Length: 228
Image (cartoon, rainbow, N blue to C red; front, side, top):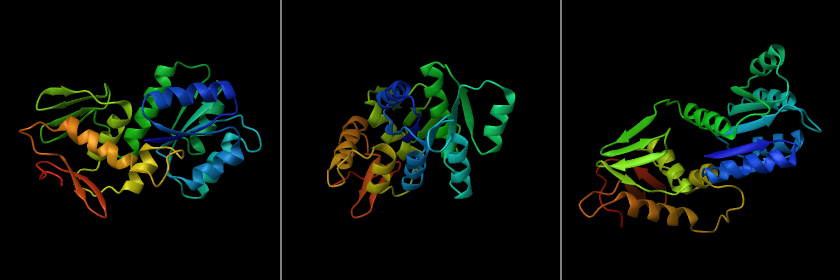
């Protein structure tokens, strides 16, 4: 999943960016409202983390501009203002959630995760396909009852696919949602990640779950034939 953090405090920006990347998210960072709005309208984000007090254009201005453009990305507001009026104003302007500074990183990550689930219209904690189970709260994977160890990025790739069962997911979509702008568009990073995920998910007697549609992308479906 791809997250944009718009926060003018360099220290907090680094902290949030590191925490999100360590959890496997693709992250873009911005320190002012004008640049943040440009990024928000130029890329397809799953969640935007938006500070209210920003230079050039404040957080409410960014939020209002996004909603006027019919951009329905989920927005988590960060605010040092703990009054009911400020929180209500943010929600009325189109925010989906808010956190009052200072906050615990664990709560921040949990709220981002919850907004990502809402992004795909599915609030279930356990996602299942055939004998595959994805626990989105604990971020654990089991297939046929056996645990599977994935990296944070591999987990997010699998969760993205399992939320779209039977649908062709293109390389461009995967790059947009799972990797940040630092990835070379000519690289084979997506193919390599899919290959690694297949190996970890598949046993010698188990059908592959990820099928390649050459020229289109990938499909996650039960009982797919072995990819060639």
